[in-house]
Image 1: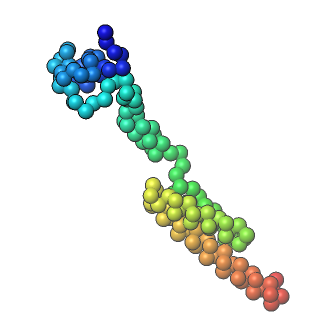
Image 2: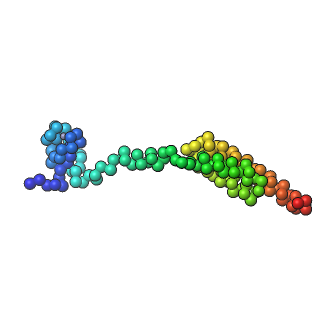
Image 3: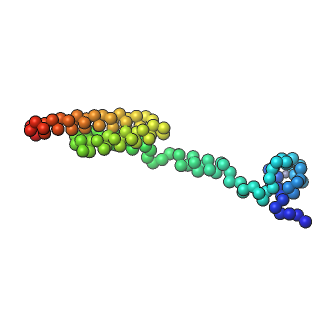
Length: 138
Ligand SMILES: [Zn+2]
């Protein structure tokens, strides 16, 4: 009588063999003694499958953080004229640029530079506006 829970499968030819067999009955492939019976092994969820999914996730995307950063940086070139828009746009460009430094370093760097320029210009614009407003020159 064969106990179905005490079998294992040959790595080489996939023939099922008793758990206590030392060699494959079909191809003679030696079994490891520490190998648990087949029924106790989780069905092979091969790491390769996860890796493929992972690669797919990290693969070419329609838009990465670096590109988003550049878009906000480009917006910042215009947005600094109105500090109300310039500050959030510049901050977003820097935030996405920081996120994109790992995946799209060149684009992310441009986004950060443009975002920083936008923030600086917005700040100057806001200060000038505030000074002019305070001195009644508006
Ligand atoms: Zn075999």
